[in-house]
Image (cartoon, rainbow, N blue to C red; front, side, top):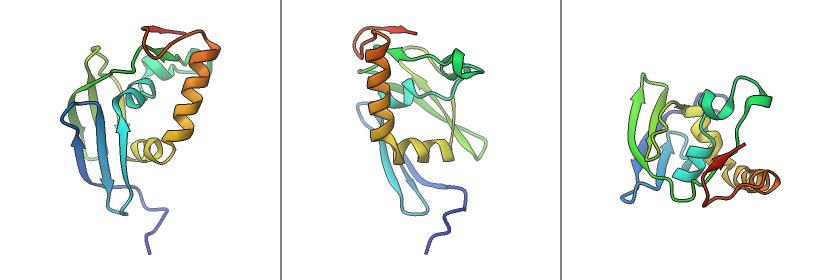
Length: 127
């Protein structure tokens, strides 16, 4: 039985051929495919998250986002570079596991935020 308190450790990371999804498998057996759009709009960077909840941005226009590079950061995270030039987020293993495990709920929340702020998945903009 897997120890659920153990920090996640990736056993495989793959960027899809079209660069629109990242697949990650953890040593626990959990495996997720996370769309580039989700990774971009849920970036853990200060540019998206801000330093407070009031500074957090909802980013539109990223339906067709692509990942241009996947780079290791030490032995604890990845830096993803996107085709729009965004490259400041550091995605820890725990954060990637959380995104994968909760992607449906997070995506619904994202769509709700876009709608509430008058933004669109296809038209660039942020609020």
